[in-house]
Length: 397
Image 1 (cartoon, rainbow, N blue to C red):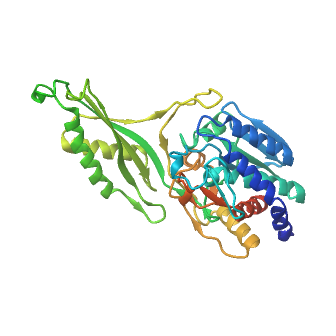
Image 2: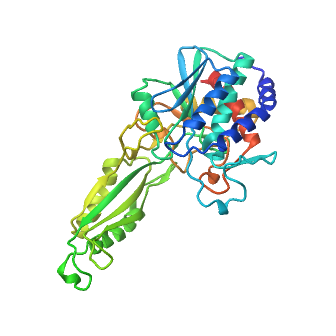
Image 3: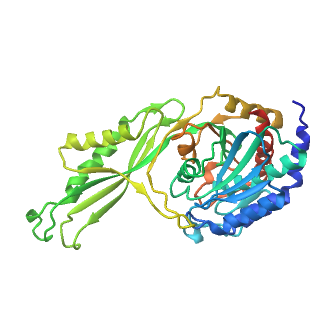
């Protein structure tokens, strides 16, 4: 394989201003989950400007940019929705200005993960400029609603759009490391019923809070017993919210609910997680209901694609050819060995590989420690290196 790596690096440097400006434009467009229309249109404009062969938006609102016409479909994905900015007083820089100081671009979505989109689009331009097309079709996806419901967009892409990539590169922040998996997660509720009565005579009723209190303690104890995987780490469970239904603050509540955040390590799945919570309740001899929650919020196009809030664990083996192809790409471009690791948080990989067993690898600009924080940021140098990596990777897999 005769490739001029220096040409790829030179092209990325040439496009430094365009990559930075594109990302700053995206940051300046508020795009929380289900409100991504304007940023999708901005991405469409940039894809058309740099010469993508085809640009489409599907009924859910995901945007697809295609490079090449080969028989092997390789996808690279960035979700382009963000979380909210929270209290603006806590930000040192305006979270939607796209502030840049020559080295760092700040703002909501910089790290998680519109930076990945900026790098992917200009990787496409580098491929076109240098004639790096081969027997592959590169699909660049800008996906929606990930922050609300990990992987929902890819459930739709795989099941309804009928796209079947051989590999998906997830461009969530990895600090320019190669990632090959992460824990899954799920959302559950435990519900207890009582009988309401006046608070001045609580013995006349049955307090649903008193039923759920020992369950909360039992969940805390359960967390200490969960399985630990050598690579992915320990499974966890946490009570993250409590709700009460009561006629007034002077009345005994007749219904209480707790929200459970369950992180699933290798070897754990939905059935096991539900069983463990039910066993906690049974051991306490308390009547309670356990529910796995559903997601049914419409996308910005108005489409509703309901799914269970279960996001399976996934891991690609370190010796898998796609992982090794990514390692070889990194070493040839940057002349050093990469770190091969995992995410702490969850990504669209929960559907792509977790549900459908389509291999995923991760490589993205920025450090995940800045995701969802008031220091949301990405180094410009990371954007260039990610663009270089994305432009070359299809040649190695």
